[in-house]
Structure formats: C-alpha cells, structure tokens
Length: 89
Image 1 (tube, rainbow, N blue to C red):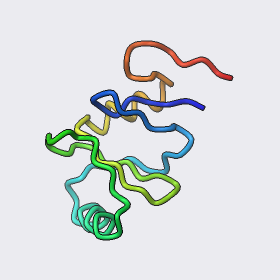
Image 2: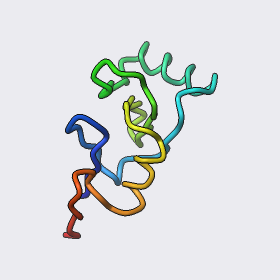
Image 3: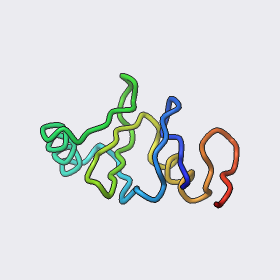
Image 4: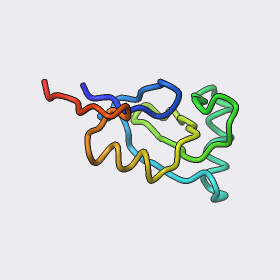
C-alpha cells in the first residue's frame, strides 16, 4: 500500500483517494460543511488555511494546507512527499 504526505507528517493511502479539489468553489464548501456535520471530516491543516480537499472512497473529506497541485504531483509521481520514492510490494 502506498501513502503520500498531505502535510505535517500526515499520510493518506493513495488507493483510497477518489478526488482532489480546491476549497474555493461553493459546491466544495457545501461538501465540506456536510462532511463536518456528519463527522466525516479529517482536518490535517494544523490550524493553517485549507488549500486542498481530498475526498476518499469512504466519503471522508480530508482538509490539507498543501496546494492541490503539489498533492497531485505526489500522486502522479508516487513520491511519499519526503523526497523518497515508494517501493511496490
């Protein structure tokens, strides 16, 4: 199982990621609020501004302080985010 760093040492399983979005649009803001109300939000921004929203296959919404493009690059390249490549098992 591969993981990517989504900020401050927090990791997300690559296989569980369904979508990656910017938090600026109204539909995403509603999605975040609905997830907060249902208790499905995981905030890994450590008090910083949310710059990326990760939606998982379990309908959890992960809020990250890292830019959407940075996380997308980590997903594409298979990097863990700490500069080391992950090995396939």
